[in-house]
Image (cartoon, rainbow, N blue to C red; front, side, top):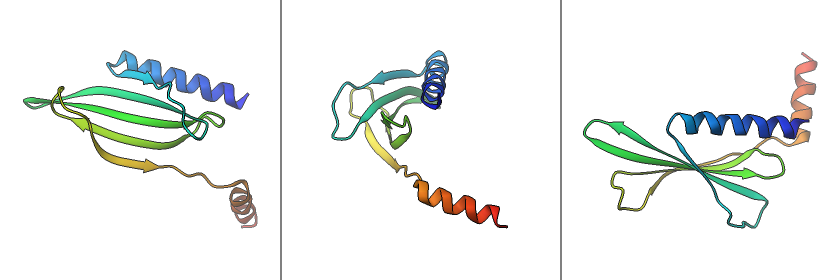
Length: 107
């Protein structure tokens, strides 16, 4: 049931972003780990120039959780995107969560 809810939430979020002018692309490239890659691109219209943005999401295909996000931008449509930031996302283990809950319940 949890996986279905995760998929529905992801689908609704993608639909909302597309409706707002964002573009979505799912890569078919194979990775060493069970990872699905999505690109989300959109123009940022500010001032006299237009910046094109792309965020690349690396999603674990088993848990449906993000593992890494890369943020790119460019100011000219004829140039390549420039990587601006990489976010590595980690999650606590079951053991760490168990210790946390035990600590909270003893207070």
